[in-house]
Length: 92
Image 1 (cartoon, rainbow, N blue to C red):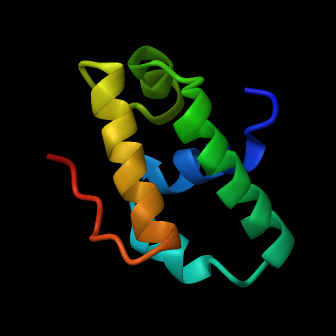
Image 2 (cartoon, rainbow, N blue to C red):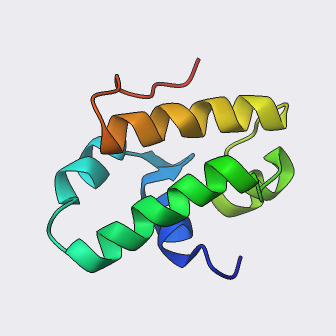
C-alpha cells in the first residue's frame, strides 16, 4: 500500500505467520534513525487510519484473523512493544 512501505517491510519480515519475531525488530530499532522514524510514523497512521482489513493482512503476512478488531488490537500491542514499554505481543 502506498505510503506504508516501512510498515509493510516490518510486517513482511517480522510479523508474518512463518517468522513472527518482533523482538529482533525491536533490537534493530535505532540503527537507522530515518527509516525508524518513518516506520513509527507509518505505524501510528496504520493504527489511526486502519487501512488494512483482516483479509488484506492475511495477503501480506499469511496470518489468518477473524475480524479487523482482532487485527488492530494485535497491532496496538506490537506498537506498544516496539516503541514503549509494552509486553511482548503474543497472539491470543
